[in-house]
Image (cartoon, rainbow, N blue to C red; front, side, top):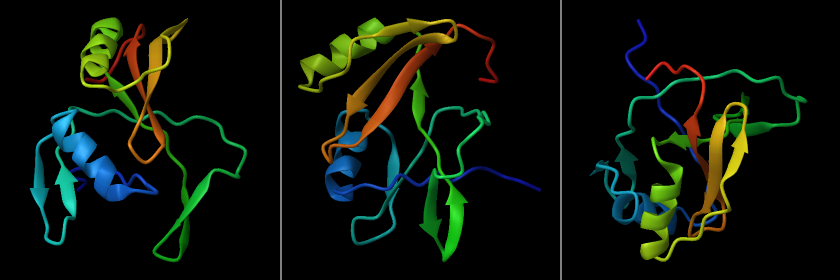
Length: 123
């Protein structure tokens, strides 16, 4: 029986990105030792999109499917303003048929998405 999901984000500066998730996004975490943090995630859903086959990540000597992280929120514009007050830059919101989205840059330079879905969700 499946009891949960564990996501991996690959970062060029994991320590800085871990600090960002702790201090800026205020995600709860536990320290497994030597700075390895596990973060609690809000309720999560999974969507499977068609891919080109080039979007993979090697892990445990296997070619694993690539993934894109979008955090869901109920008011992206307010969320963007709260991040800007903390010195975090987001892209201008984009409105699409599936929702309103933005991206935010992590300290490592990587980006994650944030969106307010306009479709039904599982959360």
